[in-house]
Structures are given as C-alpha cells and as structure tokens.
Image 1 (cartoon, rainbow, N blue to C red):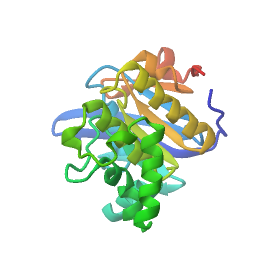
Image 2 (image 1 turned 90 degrees about the horizontal axis):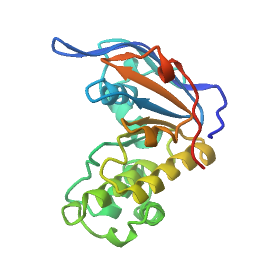
Image 3 (image 1 turned 180 degrees about the horizontal axis):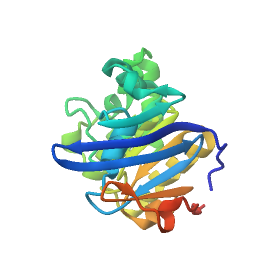
Image 4 (image 1 turned 90 degrees about the vertical axis):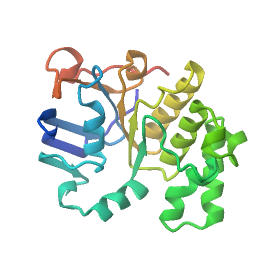
Amino acid sequence: MTRTSGTAVLRARGVVKSYGPTPALRGIDLDLAERELLAVTGPSGSGKSTLLHCLAGILRPDAGEITYADRALGGCSEAERSRLRRTEFGVLFQFGQLVPELTAAENAALPLLLSGSSRKEARTAALDWLGRLGVADVADVRPAQMSGGQQQLCAAARALVTGPRVLFADEPTGALDQLAGEKLLGHLVRAARDQGTSVVLVTHAPGVAAYADRELALYDGATDATGLGAGQRIGAPR
C-alpha cells in the first residue's frame, strides 16, 4: 500500500456541477493526501469523470471550491490552469486524446516541450517512458497507425513524463488487455510511492480500484455514505 503523509495536496469542498438542468455533482467533499492513490468509483453517469475534470481544472464547478497546495483553482485564469496541467498535473484521459499529427514520442514529449525543455531532453524522457510502458516500438508512429491499447499507453507516457505532483487518470485501463493494464497500474502505484505523486484514479472496475489506498464511491453525483464511500481504506496488490 502506498504510504501517505496525511497532508492534503488537493481539497474539494461542496463542489457542484450541472449540465443545463441535469446535476452531475451534488456537493462533493474530498481530500487527496500527498503520495495517495485515490480511486473514484461508481456506475456510469455517477459523475466520476466530471469530478476528475473539475479537480484537474479542466471544468469550472458551478459552486464550491477546489484548492491545490492551498491555492484556489477558481481564482486561476485559464492560462494558469493550463500551465498547471503542463507542469504539476498529469492528465490521462479515457480515450488518450493524442495529437494525431504527432508521433508517439512527440506526443509524450509535448508537456516538456511546452514547458521549455530542449527537444533532445524532451525526446529522451519521452522514449524512456515509452520503453517503460512497453511501446517503444511505436515511438515514431502516428496514432492512426497504432492500436487503441498502444495509443492509451502513449498517452500514459505523456501524463507521467513530467513527474507530476498530481496525476488524474480517467478509466486508464479501459483500452488495455489485462497484462498491459496491470503494468500501467503498477506504474501509477510506483509513481505515488517513489515520485511523491498523488493519483486520482477514476474506474468502475473493482480489480482496478483494488490498487488504491482508498476508495470514494459516487452515486448520482453524490458520495455514497455507506460502505467504501465513507472512506474505508483498501489494500493495493504488490
């Protein structure tokens, strides 16, 4: 199990989000500790991805407050929140969302290049992560020529390449076979343990959630106050 310090790096208080008349989040409270891997679970449509996008500063909540390192994200400009996602946040989307015109290595290197790293340094780091995740052979291939699993692993390399302080992963194993999924989850656990990265992992799969230190269950946009949603800690496979 990842050892956490108890210090919250990310907090949410009373977070509300609706899409027109349809409520997606109904007053969510959440604390994410340093080095913690938190699984956000629940059925389809329960608000899991919406919560992740609000925590990462991609969406603005309608009400409530999200703070990162004691800084209110609601007071940050779009440019400031984008900068956070290039430098201190990593985001792994459910369907990868690679830039189609770029190769796998160029996609993985993109956050470093946008943050001012040299092309050589960025490519070296990108190739390292592609190798760790088992997709070095597609380094110079564009997404259209990759399988869905290869695309997702390249997207994971892009999310991890900066050594983010917080990593947001939305159903990261959905496009992967069991072996590749277990390998990716192992890297997320090691990032939390060795790099000090806090991880928010959205999943509907109990086997994936079992890798987390703690599980937060959502149902119809609210936390489930029974069972694991109340904050029960669960072990991570070693």
